[in-house]
Image 1 (cartoon, rainbow, N blue to C red):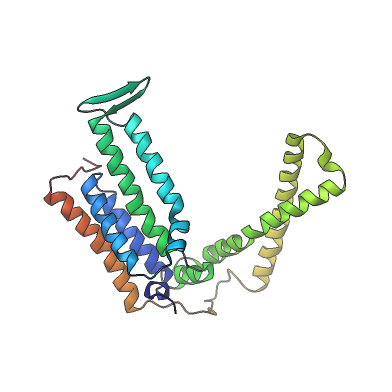
Image 2 (image 1 turned 90 degrees about the vertical axis):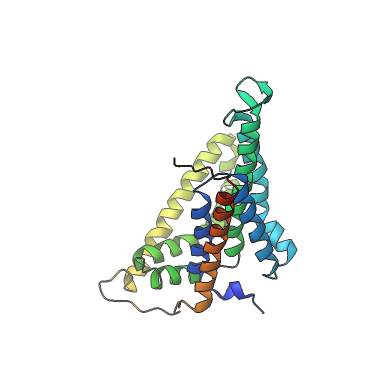
Length: 252
């Protein structure tokens, strides 16, 4: 059985993650990011997501956060006691505090976006953007078609490589072989795009009349609840930052 959040509209998931991000970009401090991250981790435990799936899908965020913090620690704003200095790198109390806040904020913003979008189907997302957000159908359907065809590029690349090797073309230098294969892949992509565009026009995509949808995308009460939860997480984090005096506005 699917979890409750998996039955929400993809647009609601995007809105919830954006609500958290918009709140956290107003300030950069340890308290707001730490509180938001703690609340998010507590909410993740209620989703019933397998631990293996969670760690595999969110691993890029967990890897990016420490490297981001390290960069800020070495080259961030210098204040307070300087602990180490080498060339342009200078580690101080201020840069370490800023690094911790930045690392936590990367996790607090990145984790909800990844977790909420793990099980989103591209077609369901396109339906939601066109029917709920009312984005132009031509743009949404064109982007969906392009997304669907991205997976074919890997197959085309492999087939081109095998075909060129069978013809003896791949025996030249690596750089020349790479350039020729990229050019051939570009030609294939353009041809396929032209065929898809012709097929979509033949089916009246982009016409002046109002179109119908095979799958109806609706906004339910649970979608509103999800967005409200996202705003609450951000609001609680900002409130904790203001109350503790840790507020450090980015735009001041």
